[in-house]
Amino acid sequence: MKRRQLLHTATAGSAAMFLPAVIAKAGEGFEGILDSNVSLFRWPFRRLPLDETSLLVEKLRSLHVTTAWAGSFECCFHRDLGEANARLHRECDTYPELIPVGTVDPSRRGWERDFDACVSGLQMPGLRLFPNLHQYSLDHPAVKRLFLRAAESGTFLQVVVTLEDSRTQPEQIAAPDADLRKLPDLMRAVPDVRIQLLNLRPGVSQLAALKDLPGLFFDTARADSVDGVASLLAGTSPERVVYGSHSPFLIPEAALIRVHESNLGFDTLRSVLRENSERMNP
Amino acid sequence: MQLSDISYGLPGREQMKRYRIWDSYFTPSHGHPGKDGVSALLADMDRAKRSALDLGQFEKCCFFPHVGIGTTSDSGLERLLREKPELVLKPFDHWPGRMLGMIQLNANDKTASLEALNRWLRDGPMQGVYFPGGGPGALCCTHRNFLPLVERVVELGGVIMQHTWFVTGGKPKPGMSTPSELVELAQKFPDYPFVCAHAGGEWERGIRAVADHPNIFIETSGFDATAGFIEMAVRELGAARIIFGSHLPSRSLGTELSKVTAADITEEEKFEILGANFRKLLGEIEE
Image 1 (tube, each protein chain N blue to C red):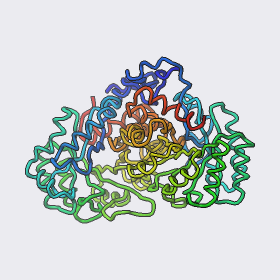
Image 2 (cartoon, rainbow over the protein chains, first blue to last red):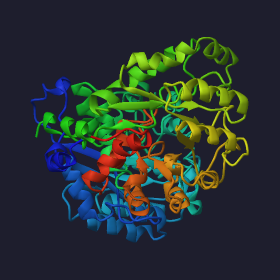
Image 3 (cartoon, rainbow over the protein chains, first blue to last red):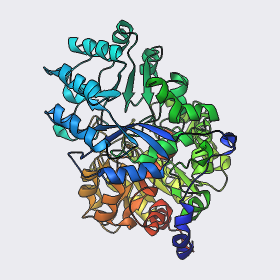
């Protein structure tokens, strides 16, 4: 290999890998990718290369992400959720791409106030839940009340199944994935609620139990294997898989290449990269 | 914007070729090649084709064949592979000129493993060995059974790939090995290279465990694309001790390739990690 040649041509070569012929017919306008799963601020256990919002946004722009639903690591680890949600809102206000998605913890007294502050006060379209790290189960009585409130107000909910593979979690926050077994009954009891599962590593049996819930959406962040996204689509619904990267904890390119790798048809690709998120948040 | 304007964060085709990717950890049907000894394995290779060959432009893919020495729990398969060793070679015919092989050893059965080393490594075409972390062939690499096997591999000049994980909460299975345990083994052969597969999974601990042992390389696959991995590995070990693996098709090109191509390191370092370092371990001479 001519290393000088490699170095000389690297910049041009890495510029873009354009889509294959299957979507060459893509002639109509596209608003850009919507990433439903990014987080701002610091991960407590290591510095992430893109944990400065400006760097993360620069990376998202380079990948043609024009909208990102942004949660906050602070909302997971801080006790003062009111301030963490407000700070998330202020940070997103600086970047037109970022739509803040605050957090409530229904196991804590006063969660209704956090809900109203985010939804009515700060006009957030959705809220994120961390059952495994906030240590409550989905059969906690307040969860159903939260689902009802979300359905009534047209707010989508993102249930973070985990932030990290349980095998590699820091011991201080080691927790199994959120237990989703109660979710079908809960969603049937609140049929208008829209829920997205984030960071699920989908298994066949788990998908079988979840696939028939029309208000349930999935993200692509950990749908691994060469046909992981295609399998997720086949195992659920072409209308309920939404692009999500779990950046900056995971490398932003990982989920995007994986979608490309799944060799989806033009219409499905459009749906996953943008349109399904608009179905979830009309 | 049109959808066809979208790039996917993947380097262009020509750039991928210039990287000269040699995948050290290709895992089609890793646990069982199929009842007939090969069909599931070939089908899984085809499943990975678009990622490995069409998008990744991989020059070489190294897989880990079972050779009938008890690395699966299927006694019928084990017997079949002993009786028809030509089945083990089918993947080489399936992708001519592209496959490399390192046989799975069973450290629980020293005799069979030593015979397999003669049959497959001394006489070819395999180029190394893989010590698994699961299944009936798994044994912690600090066990005394490893010494005669490693001594023989060293005599034959093969690559040694050891599956490793640091699992939060402790080992789920006693046959698994950690990077720290690989250090114990590798210290007995300080002039011979060992590959720490998956960098221990929990790579911050894995990298630190092997950092002071220059004969240990890390392999990059098998865990989520957690940001910062390659940057830390290059900083602590140097790019020369890092070897790309894809774990295709059970993992994705997105997860595994982006760890390297999207890392904040130089293009020269990417070139080393994606193929040059593995070629050196295999004794290939760079142009």
